[in-house]
Length: 351
Ligand code: TRP
Image 1: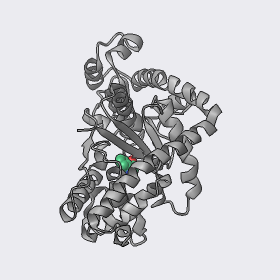
Image 2: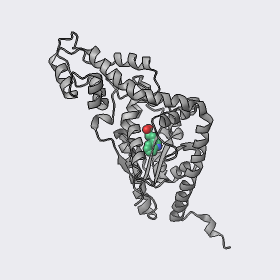
Image 3: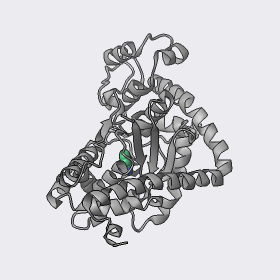
Image 4: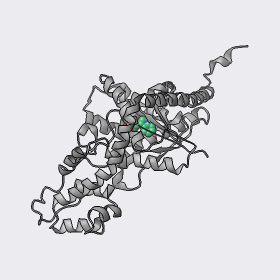
């Protein structure tokens, strides 16, 4: 079987280190392993508009920001088709047919939708388009016959919905659609990096992020402000590692190399954690260590981005060309769907 990888992001803001550990690093790895026939990354503007109808400019301006973030972490446009969702209108058409295969009750049960409704406080003001975005996301995936979908845990209900739609379609009409599978990050802590405040997942809306494009001083200032253990007041106090943002980030980013380079008096993270638990290790020291690690990670990304920013037109051209290629594939799929449903009406002509 062919491997077709597809994933995407909503262009509602710049990508941050939570995206990096949760998905971007893995995408670059998948890209470099080369074990696929096609690899698509969609900038999901249509999906972003489902709860930003009055903020079109925000979505529009962030398309290029997200594209720059992708390219600067090393996603290679020669290997991966990066495109803008709304430039493949077949996805909208497909969504119309899929809507008939999903009940309202099923949409309301979607745990991700439930969570997002709570966060956004829509109550009874929820746009229908937002409610239906899991169906449109199924189209994103099924249009390209994608079988491997690298996503964070929060997207698993979307994948389940896409699989259900594929099964319903295939059972009701004919076997046309491929049932996709999620590829979730391995290390558990990497799938949902906590925000600097230690309360919520890192997200633009919570204002608790370190962005990939942040300047060195900003990174340092954010790291120094990270939530640790409020009861660890004097250096000599015993400290708690669980729920401590600095240690959560070290779990995700520190390697043996980092210790050798920046903190050689400790062998590894276990040793550092034990010292913190016992008391005698101050927050400033662990924060400066984390700062060194993040500065090293983000410097080349920021440099590459600055170079890419000189050629914005080229990036848009790349996106537009890719959308045309993606459309061809989506058209093929929708034609096969229509045949299977028996709504390819041109066949009704006698000659
Ligand atoms: N819902 C995804 C997110 O918020 C973005 C997305 C849109 C996506 N279409 C997709 C992810 C298709 C994977 C596959 O991050």
